[in-house]
Length: 133
Image 1 (spheres, rainbow, N blue to C red):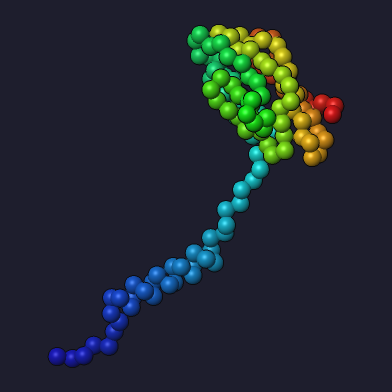
Image 2 (image 1 turned 90 degrees about the horizontal axis):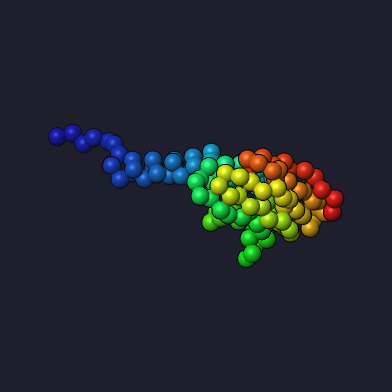
């Protein structure tokens, strides 16, 4: 019987593992996390307000979360604001599809920016406007 010159299964598996590990280290970039923006908050707020508004027998408030001012509480759901932003005042009532008028005031202590989320009377329409610090 001839002696074949070749590689054992173990050698092949180890060399493939080393090649894959090197490939992963060079090709895969570390995941970049981006900070939440006011646009992200608006998108999330739209979805939650519309869902809650359409729920029959809804009676809840949108207000600053008492344990963490970096969050808005809408019933049992929380919306996290961008870093360094806080909701300093305001409360909005959602009752059976109807939205009471009101304003939430958000402030950023680092950049000294302020934003108002103004809810209009009616069906949950609101606008995000720049405000004075």
